[in-house]
Length: 379
Image (cartoon, rainbow, N blue to C red):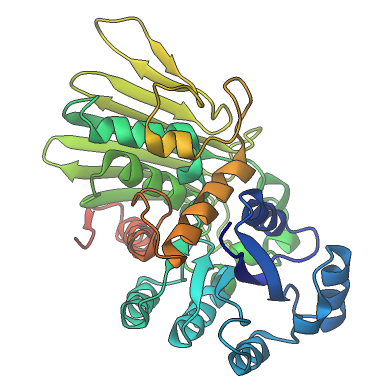
């Protein structure tokens, strides 16, 4: 077996959901070993957490800059090869840029940066660096999402007419209606989260899902946001009309105040021959709908699925594949890229996906700000 890839982790300490998701995902396919980290800005908490999860403490650093400086002193065959950035949004850009400039591979949580301009700077830095860069749009790792992508690519739907993607959550209801709470949460602080909360956090996942599965790009959009309170500067709900061509149109619906909703990401793609439907809370089922045939259900692990789907399936048919497995599939693709192995371009979202995401976020904010008008995205 190939030697394990040396992984560094930034953020994700304590009871962070995203931290445990990345750590478990990195271990699932036996490709990575955590060798260095800054889990927490407080060094005592940082060390305590490393001991709690049994990571050697000799390369637990006081801060990010120290980590880079000390790792570069080590022989190349010992130092961190790839670093996972799991920090709040405002730290993504400076950390990713410095890592790329110093020859590290990067796995970055989304949004990749807080502005589109930063994203373009980061893209130029990455092009000079020549390293691997992945953005963790986790849901692209689900086997049946990958199956949908491959079937659409093969012409299963024919010409696509319409796309409808939504991502509904209700978690911010416990915060947004309390003035003190909504003033203290980093997700609602533009200095830490960027210019958008709802569209920047979850709406961008729906956007990415559309472009990932259809192979088409959003060209223009019109957005309408809801902030709920005058003193709240960040959107918590939004609807976006999209145009992907003269006769290919769609809708992105996103909300953090959809009462009772948990993690309701869903996508419907309608074509001239048939349609696909997939829901994140029921990820094992990909529905194919038709005007002339009975509805069909595709499930993971069966021989009728594509190679990309089957390689992302770890369990026999009938055993649910979950979000840990989806993130693990992204880590697996990154490992193949780092090792110079052949891989499908659908195995992990790239720098270009990160740039498109920031372009989308800023375009929706601009459309809403201008009074809900059509805004063009860059090609």
